Length: 243
Image (tube, rainbow, N blue to C red; front, side, top):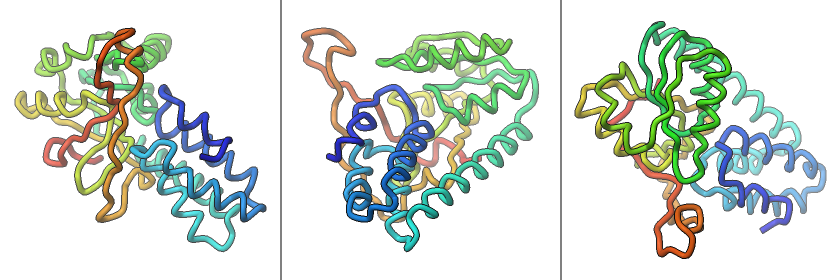
C-alpha cells in the first residue's frame, strides 16, 4: 500500500466523511504526477474497503482526464448533497421527537444540532465513538443520553425514530457500525421508523461485491483474548428507508 495511505487504513475512529476529506487532500498533493496518482488511486479503496466514498472517489478520478479538477468536483458535489440532505432531514423531523442514533455520523450530528429533540446515543463499542457525539450534543444544549449498545433494543419502543448515517449502501443493504442490524430489527418489531442519511458518494454501483471484512485487534475488546472484532454489519434494505 502507498505509504501516505497507511494512516487512513489504520484509522479506526473516524467516519466516511472525515476519511474522504483526508483521502482527497492526499490525492490533490499528487494530482499533477500521474504515475504517483495512479498508485494512490489503485490503493485507496483498499484502505477502508467497506467505506463506499473512498471507492467512489478513486473511481471518479480515474475516469477523468483532469484529475485535479475531478477531485475538487467530487468534494463540491458531496458538500452540496450533504447540505441538501441535512435540510431535508430537518424538515421531516419535528421538535420534541425522541431519536436513537448509533455510532457518530457527521450528517446525523448536523441534523441533531439543528433540532430541539431528545437523543439516545449508543456508546458504539469497541472504539466508543458514540461517546464523542454525546459530548458534542450535550455541549450544544441537546438533551442527549448515553446508553450501552445492548440497551438500544430495550429503549427503541420509547423512540419516535432511529436516525443513522451510512458508510455505504449497495444492493445488499446498508453498511454501518456493527450493531446497526439488530437495532433495525428491534425498530421493525416496535414499529419505529429507521431513517438513513446517505449522499451519492455512499452508494456502490450495481453489482458491487464487498470484500471479506477483516477482524480488528482483540485487545480493543479484551487483552489476550480470542475474539471476532468486526466494525461493520449489513442491514437489509427492507429494514430502513433512505431520506
